[in-house]
Length: 326
Ligand SMILES: Cc1cc2nc3c(=O)[nH]c(=O)nc-3n(C[C@H](O)[C@H](O)[C@H](O)COP(=O)(O)OP(=O)(O)OC[C@H]3O[C@@H](n4cnc5c(N)ncnc54)[C@H](O)[C@@H]3O)c2cc1C
Ligand code: SF4
Image (cartoon, rainbow, N blue to C red):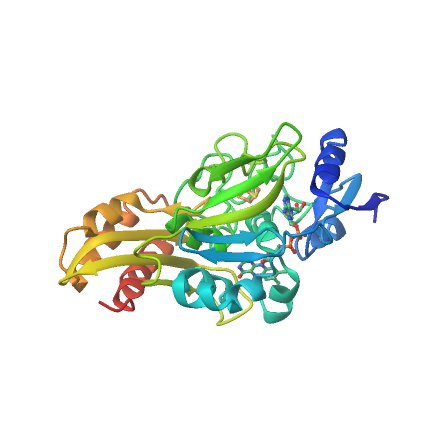
């Protein structure tokens, strides 16, 4: 282990100012990802700022304008909230398909959006990884890449984005609310995570020291008829091979609005706009679902061991849509 300073934050302005001054600082929320990365020597923060006691970031507010989830809300509390479970089932289902009950009791929503990839090479010091050590190469490109992304990869990184919650939020056009020294901002989640390009070490648009304070989900007609379906190697405690968040508004058997986002197959949570366009205006039939599924994976580029993810994700899209009530 390496030495680091530990400090407990008392208010938002204080932790943001502290993190701004010390670029080696990391916020500590549930600690379920950060502490493992520190133990594995993948991240070496000089200062750990505990944000768990910051006031009012653990609140859930629901009203006619939508839903607001505080950044420190635990995954288990969000999933169990009656409004989340009944009005935004895709969010509750994505959370309940994540990790294990024990981890969901500790882990926060803000931390979930910022968890690092599960690419084995990223967490293994003996191998080349552009995300861990920029310029060192990518061992996955010609190595073990069965779990890696088929959408959004580059010659520098093909790691799959790990968060299930982020996929549901992308489907619902959520917004991430932040605080930073120069003033907070609202970031549409579609633009929050970055493609790897030639800088895979940069995973999101947050500035150094910027704190997530909440997540806003708009009131959408389709949110109540929504669903998250995750396919993985074992039934629990496992990341997605392919997952799909769907939501739809259907009137007289015809699709009026549709949302489709993919997880497990993209280097970031993947909104499938072409698939949505293919579905809107169509009758609610399996043939329409299959057309949308083909569009969703049209741009996929497999590596040596993950080609199976393309038909798997297509079938997952069809099944997730079939499971929505018409
Ligand atoms: C065995 C295992 C299985 C898992 N399976 C899944 C799964 O299937 N699906 C899934 O989605 N996740 C899964 N996870 C990941 C888990 O959901 C994350 O570890 C967790 O959500 C992170 O939240 P945390 O509060 O513990 O974050 P922490 O570990 O405390 O922090 C993670 C990162 O986010 C930063 N951070 C935290 N909060 C904020 C904030 N408010 N503002 C700015 N920065 C912040 C921290 O500085 C750190 O860099 C799994 C984890 C484990 C260990
Ligand atoms: S896929 Fe990305 S995270 Fe994995 S080894 Fe390559 S650069 Fe590193």
